[in-house]
Length: 138
Image (tube, rainbow, N blue to C red; front, side):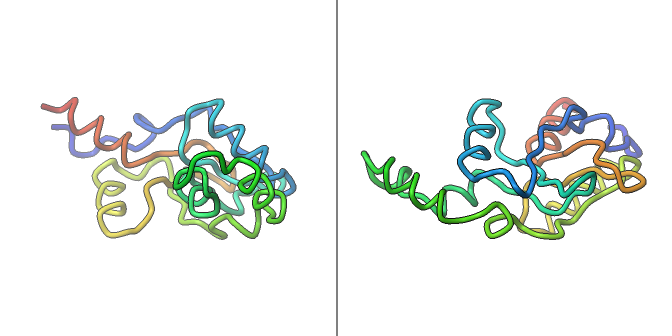
């Protein structure tokens, strides 16, 4: 097993992000279209937050009841991205090791972390990325 492998080897480099001023409906559309579960929120060139599909599911009825799309749409229209996102999310450097990221996830309640170098979003890494890496080692 490679012990000092940097997280840059497993992170998603072409990160899809949204802006604070985007609507939650747009966020949901981007999540579904790209089949992703976490999306960084940008304010200019800085990461200001992160939204997960779990955050959206907590707001909507669609996962609990059938035929609730109208209610879900109304809720999404009432709230803004900054109201739903996790503000000031933990970020990491691309030079952090995969082991260190695994330890971070093991001690935290989140499942994705933006990778930021010199104030610029460079990638995102998830618990799934770490698990896939670990599985590849066996």
